[in-house]
Amino acid sequence: MNETVVKIENLVKRYKDLIAVDHLNLEIKKGEVYGLLGPNGSGKSTTINSMLSLLSYDKGRIEIFGKEMTPVSYDIKKKIGIIMQDVAVFDELTVYENIDYFCGLYIKDKETRKKYVNDAVNFTGLNDFLKFYPKKLSGGLLRRLNIACGIAHKPELIILDEPTVAVDPQSRNRILEGIQELNQNGATIIYTSHYMEEVEQICTRIAIMDKGRKIAEGTKEELKGMIKNTETITVETDNVPDEILKKINSLSHIYETEQNEDKLIIRCCGGKHNLIRVLNILQESELNFGRVYTELPTLNDVFLEITGKALRDREE
Ligand code: ADP
Ligand code: MG
Image 1 (cartoon, rainbow, N blue to C red):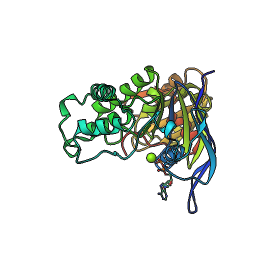
Image 2 (spheres, helix red, strand yellow; image 1 turned 30 degrees about the vertical axis):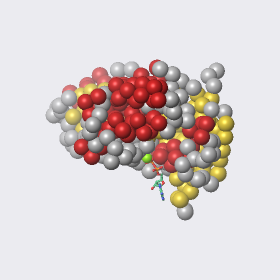
Image 3 (cartoon, rainbow, N blue to C red; image 1 turned 180 degrees about the vertical axis):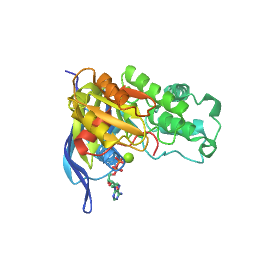
Image 4 (cartoon, rainbow, N blue to C red; image 1 turned 45 degrees about the horizontal axis):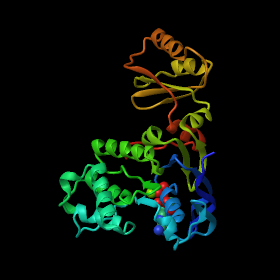
């Protein structure tokens, strides 16, 4: 069994009457890319900030690298790289100077520091922008600078809080690939996001959060195995007559239909040939319809089944 890097026991953080983190338990092992997935306001950033002792909390115990984490645990902090949700760099320093500053907080040897800064520059692809000031950078480049500052000292544990928000697709892919590379080079990663496809793409284990609580945890396969949905069939069509809906609903292994503006969504639980049986009904009925496609469950389906509401994705 791999050693435990982070252990959170019974963490509670309140803001007046609001419970932002509600009796949370987490255990993260060395080598994981651990995802915290949840909608805005579900308590991801509060968890991260409490975990790092950047925020005081009401209850609970946090251990990192086997030692209790406190605001003065500098020996632990040295081994952690933090990329906050809100970009935190100095506007009056250039790209190079920013990375050098953050690296210098932990790396005192001059030669090593220079090498590490260059590694971070190469890694984030900021070579052409070293003399730029942060204000002149696009959203994607600014994020990459934020990441370079967080990882330059080669931390063993890297925590990224929503690092792809307001980032163009090209930079986003680069960031996701970069995180996987850091993991392959030995770092343990904690990654928060409200984008389920990103979490699916890179995380080895995922905690789904809602209202400060962990509502499910596992690999993406395990999470999808927890729900009854096995397949969702979508038919592009507007306004399906009630009698056809009834027929579809009466098929075995179909537990729910939902009529949106221009789509009929049919949710299946097991069984074979669901698509063919639906198509037969549609064809018999002489209904006008466009594309028909089936999809395997997503983490959104997991969230939907547990909470009764959708986890919004990509477009806000
Ligand atoms: P997430 O990172 O998942 O979007 P947050 O941890 O930022 O969620 O927020 C969790 C909850 O705590 C939200 O309801 C948010 O409004 C509330 N919250 C966060 N920070 C504060 C604060 N400084 N004061 C009061 N409420 C806060
Ligand atoms: Mg947040």
